[in-house]
Image (cartoon, rainbow, N blue to C red; front, top):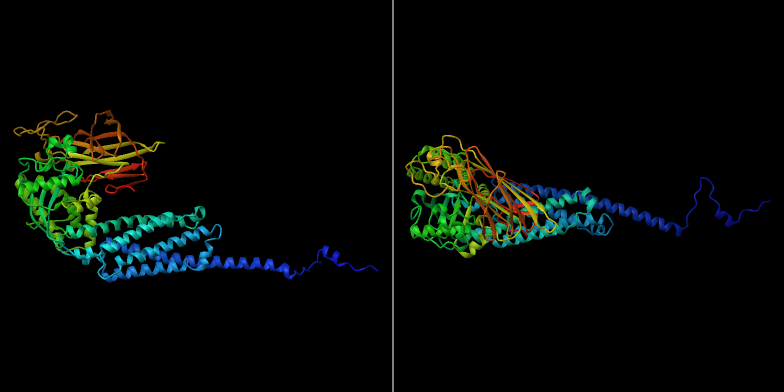
Length: 637
């Protein structure tokens, strides 16, 4: 009889089919532990995923509310104080909910899990940053009578300067909060490929774009709370010389002075008096002697044009702080009236204001809508009114009619501020102050119109009428900037400038005027500087004569220059550290002239500072080889 198998032999044989060995308690524990861990991890991931989706939903709702709020503040829809508080409350509730959903201990544990820990940390960091930003901004946004309740800030031509002044601490706090928000986003990882797959990188980039825009906006608001109250007469009446420039005869900051007036501001209330055409300039178009000494730096460039004696030449330099000092001195010398600063605008700015309010109504009952104003005062008037005195009266009437439209209370404050902001960004609205502390702040903004004192890529193209004609109404300009970085960090730059004379046939003598080639019986004044044959007396073919200059980056050097494909010599000057390359240029009717400058820039920063000249039709500008084109008033970080 066969003996039964021993236990040892039993252990070495496989179990019979259909049977499973029972594990010992000791053997079952590790398997159970792994199973429970996997289940817990799955539950944790599921829980976090659900909460993450909910948090994203809250953030999207907050984002939509922020966009709606932005449109309401900048658009034509009125936003009451109650509506403003309601939107801010909703944004705050949504971001707080998102932060709560991503702030529990389980979510924090996920930070330490390989692979998915990075997105977890980044999401929590961004949600926390958004919620903190909204919380820190509530002081500015939420209280009764917020400074952002724009329509309640203005009544006709009176601004509530006390409320603007009271908002200064909150504006400063909010600006700092947004700066911290931007820095936190910059330091947040986008988590590589996994971040791309779940949309983390796009969310971070979108947040950065909003942050940069908000940072600029709150910086402007912060400056406004410092500048507006004193400049608007909160501490006593202020007087400003108002200059309306005419780009039909171009100058560096826009055009020659076409009309002027005196703005008086008392505790936020603006009044306009004594508006006149340039035929009645104080002291005459050319005063007996210089109203102020010309800065030594400008002697070589502008002394012959006498900008401190000749009103029409006071803005040959694009540096508006200098222009403002010239205008102030000329006005005070001619009238004996002290002014606190200057405000320069052009007809396009007036058109923006009419679009935000209502059409202007002239004394004869004629209605001038926004879309007709520029053509009327820069071109049509010269065909309709032959004598200078009649044109002066007409320009004064238009100026008064635009002021009355703005003062009527039609439109809303948001639309008006948008119009003024657009004009400032295009260089059409410029302000100077004779109070040093205010002027120092102004020079950091587009309103101040200063040539920036910094290194790195910079470009400002300037055309100036050299024959006292009004042909620049028909000038069209395009500029292309191309930069190629060198291994040493410098750059080779090619600047291509094209100027076209689109003047039609049959323009009047006054518009076609060439002071260097006068019509028979008219006195001449100066030489043409034209590189083409001189036009017939009276310039019947409307040949335009210009001075063309390019202001480039500090330390840059010209390598070569061509005009219409042929080598050309360029005059070289220096203003506030910027090389100035210039040449006279005549442009026949229907012709396009092309100037190409090849130069070396010592610093190849990714951002180009570009300053537009306010022309009748804005120049077409393109750039390559740089990451971005920055507002011309802002120094790069």
